[in-house]
Length: 226
Image (cartoon, rainbow, N blue to C red):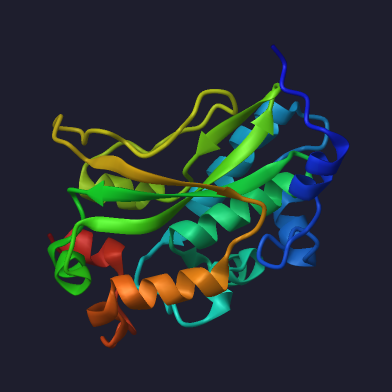
């Protein structure tokens, strides 16, 4: 049965948000350049996913104390972000093209993070990991544009692809068949990023990391160094 969104919900998930700021000129230009206007929604969703995945480098060493870490336009300007910011940018790019999009959150267990990151975090649980849900072909599809292709190569996994139809969450196994990431707790989806809440959660969950000097640290460089 086709899931037809009521007009009010369609507007909720296609109008700009404070953090999914699809009305920002730079976001609009980025989305327009990444997907042609005459493509199908499925094709656009896939092309936009790839543009965010590889156009924005993943780095978890970001400042969790500023709301700009969670804002789509700020992540685009920086060219680097962590999962929530990249999910917000992907949602914003989809909204530019009129594709309903929202952000979802889950706690995930990561078995192949770098040793330096694990020491800083004090755990292999990433709380409130962000992903994106897009409404294509009558249903919500989940996609995670988190890990860029160059980082994936360094940690030994293939980049996660999204065809605009089948869900694309994080890899369950790495290239050698070892457990990679597991979803532990689903926190549901939101029409915009709850940035103030996330800033408080990150301060509680990763108190030790909040006190570290993270400037100059880069996960991709750490992965390359082993």
